[in-house]
Image 1 (cartoon, rainbow, N blue to C red):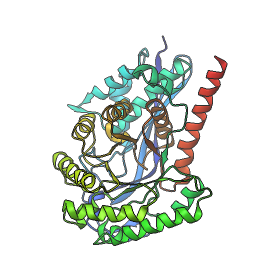
Image 2: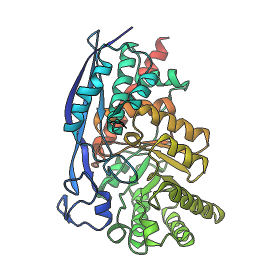
Image 3: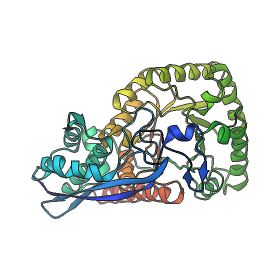
Image 4: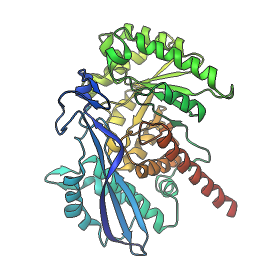
Length: 417
């Protein structure tokens, strides 16, 4: 049985930045790529600061090296999530408290070891979710390497699923460059687009939603004008960070009528809206989303609602799914901790006939994105996020190419059997 011989750590950078969402929603202005003003969320030293990561390298007794990356979301500390993740203090935690638990340890199952790491406590608290995330990736890679398997094959074996034989639809995000990046997405035939980052009322949504409405009209026209083939019909998915609720005073009918107008502007493309409201806590969020979804269904408005904020744990995923609060749940990978929790979240959504979106954040790394591809292939969610970064090309390339490599290797294995 293979063993972990040594744990090696290195601090790194992520594909984007940490942003203080509360300060931005309060109207922080731009100064080039910086934000003006002081942060308001605990742990931030500036409204925008460089993203940090930690690579966990498990040296196995046969000399192979398994790799996972610890990373946290762009909007850390918001929506009930763990605080900002800075590498230096957590390197000490990994070195002093976690490495001794792993060095010399025999590899058993990925699922068992990942759950063990999720349960580790330091000072009476569970490890930061970023640490759980990176540790689980490294353990998955270690089990795969020791068994000469792809990570998606390990997941399929341990969770009794079937690895997909076709690509999972990829959702690309534009960041604030929501016009030029759409052109890139059309050129590359992205399945789901554009995210659009509508995170302020006055600057991006419009006090009456007029700015987003104009953007959706432009988006529809741009796809129809520039698509190479009439067969290209991407799913539209826009994240509004609760701004629709803010603009329409959380009035269900007014929000519903507005969403109906967006659906008309988007036709013939179907439309999903992520985070139409942010009610500040889980129960209120679930109740409001459920009421809005019921109104849309009653009035035949073809807009799908996506849960993001206040859905941070497996318990939260179950809560929103069982209450049928939305049409799709984002499984936000770093927020759920170990990647096994994201796997279980996808499977739970599918069991409850809800859309499953394997998401995450622009503030991840190439390695965490690659490992998420394997989670997606083994569980077959409706879509997965192109990540990291906000430049579109880089994150899309990483996810797209890792997916194609895995599918090609799996096909070659089947052909050799």
